[in-house]
Length: 218
Length: 236
Image (spheres, each protein chain N blue to C red):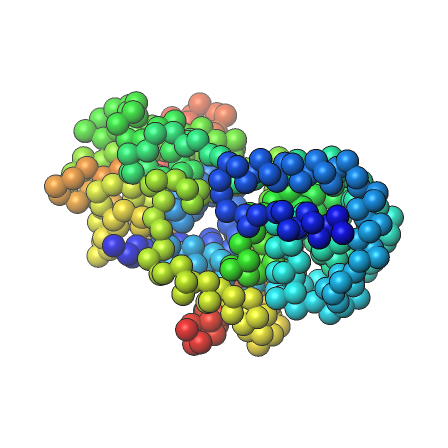
């Protein structure tokens, strides 16, 4: 089955250029693992970068000294063969790189209740600007706690959800920004497991602001 | 002569344990006699490919990198180094603005090219794109950032359903086609792509620097890649 909602060119370019921070990249890379078409687009972008690379104006040529320095390092180096990756046990639901962040596939996950039958797992990254969570939404129910500012990426791993007219199923990536008012709802029949990456909420130091923050939804 | 004999021994790199053992063996040989081997190599320049001044086509570059990967050919690597080293150094200097650091990152990138050369699949053709990805990853590491990547050997990875043989042919054409297609892009679109790839600039920084709205940056990105993709698809 083909992925219907692929990553946008703008976001994919950020990933291709190495300009996307860890949290967002985790969603994009996991989407790429599930979407061969998007990988071909990534490849075209890297090809474009290669073509630009060939055209870089070179101010200084490589001197013999440069080469001697390089050559001296070669003999001492170890050859990297095919990387032997030992991925955590796969049940075919959660692909890499996400599975390693979670430490296992669906049956080994330790969910925390969010109320109303929904569950979440917080995923640690070194990225201070994003909040990364795995969500499990009961069939037929809306995504809970759904207020956010700024960008939000949602990647479906199991089941599906509706958002307005659009259906998002396994591999589909939804990109939303703060201006979009939406109420994603899990499709009847199967719980929906998705990866949600949002901008980390601002932490206000004043307790007054902290108290009214949920009311004002800021 | 030594090299001839060695390349005769070097097996075609597929992925079994016995082969990597033999590679180790070759490496050791090279390490034991680095001087003799290099001197020999200089006298033994066999083709135009190992002459640095030669204008290198994508196919030449692919052959050279394959030779580095399969035969640990130091002469082929020297040609690649002289071609890409200065480009990698300029690429690094654009972001770091630090000559010393750019030099170090260039050396590390080229070292990684030497070490990973056997992972390069000549059927997939595009050496410049491959070296760009290595340079990009070195730059990310240097700033201690992380960029999660998919793993093609992961059982949950969804493979492309295009037969590998067709894909190979397509991708071999792509390098040359992309190069030509890039030349047809309007300068303002090319400018946005350059800033994104080389300066690692965010879209809002690009908008600010160029004095244009953010929406315009995004539409230029979309237009550029639509054009590139339609050029690639037109020949398929």
